[in-house]
Image (cartoon, rainbow, N blue to C red; front, side):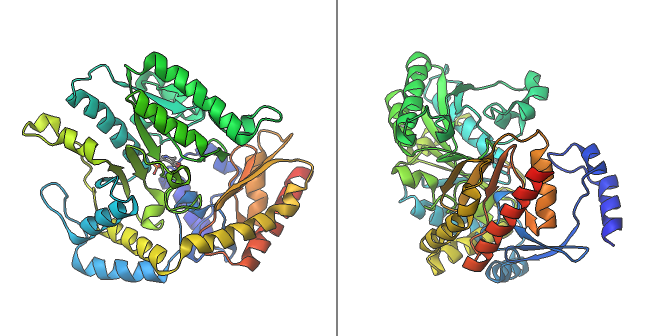
Length: 438
Ligand SMILES: Cc1ncc(COP(=O)(O)O)c(C=O)c1O
C-alpha cells in the first residue's frame, strides 16, 4: 500500500521545493493519518511533527474542536465569492482580529497563501502612495536573508538566491538592508547593540532613498527561512520610528511568526509597535486550510475609499475569505481564548529549553537560541548534505526534523507535554550524534 502510494505520487505529483530526482535516494513518506503532534506513516511508524508541518499547525493534527466547528460549517455554507457577498465567518474573523490589534489594524483583506498576502501588502502600499500623488514611491526594502514567499512579486522581497536566481529576468528585486540577526554580532557586541547598528544602516538607506521607497518589509523577531535568525525587538522599534520619519510603510510579515509562535499573539507586540500592514497565514487556520490575510490601518483603507473605481484595491482570488478556512481560524482563536495558551506556552517554551540543554553542551553546537516556541541551533563544520542526512536520521529516531542548511530547529505545535518535550530533546541529541558520526 505504502509502496504503491509512493510510486504513484512520484509519477503523478510534482512535489514542492524539491529536486524530484533526489527522491531516487530519499524516499517520499506516505502519511496515513495524524493526531496531536504525531504523524502516522502508511507503513505503521509514528513521527513527532517537530516543525508543525511547515510551521502551520498550532493545536495538533485533527484537533477535535476545530474538526467539530468545520463539520458544522460544512453543512451550512462551503463557499461563496466575497466580491459583492459576505458571510458570518469572514465578518466575525475580521472583527476578532481587529480587536486583537486594539483596532489599530481594523481592515482585513483575504487571500489563500502566504505569498499572496505579501503581494497584497506590497501592492496596497504602492497603490496608497499612488492615490496620494506620490508616483515615485515604487521600491521596497527587505532585510538581508529575508523570505516572504516565492511567487514572482514576493520573490522581489525574498533575498534567497537559491529561490530567486533562475527567475531574475521576471523579478524586480527590492533593496536589502543589513539583518539584525544576533549571530552576526561582533565579538562582545550585545544583541541590542547589534540591532541598533543594523537600524543605523537602515536609517542611512532611508535618508538617501526614501523618496522612491514605498515600504520596508520585515519578519518580526525571527527570520525563519534564513535559518531561524533571531533578533532584538529594539530593531522593530527603530524601524517603526524611521519609517514614520521618512514616510515609508512598515509591513510586518507575521505569516510564520504570528499566532503565538514567538510568545505574544503578534510578534510585533514584543516591541510595542504596530505596522501599517500585518500579513498572517499558516497558523491562523490552525494549520487546516489555506488562508492568508493582510490587516491594515484606517489611514490606508481611507486612501482607497473613493468614487473612482481605479482608486480602489482591485485585487482578488477566487477563494478569498473562504467560509471553511475562516471557520478553522475562528476555531483556532476560540482555542486561544478558552485555555490561556500564551501563558501555557511560556511553560512549554521552558520545557523545550530544558530539553535542549544537553544539545547546547555538544562541542559542534553554536548559537543555541530561542524565541518563544521556536528553538534553534547551528551545527559547525558539517558538509553540504548535513540537512538531508539529519532529516533521514531523524526519521529513524521518530522525528520529523527538517534542518535549514546547518540550522536544526524545533517549532512544534502547542500540545507537547513535558515528557514529550524531554523525548524530543533526547531523540534530537541521538539524531545529531549519529549524523555527525557518519
Ligand atoms: C515569513 C514568510 N512569509 C511568507 C511565506 C510564504 O507563505 P506560503 O508558503 O503560504 O506562500 C512564508 C512561508 O514559509 C514565510 O515563512
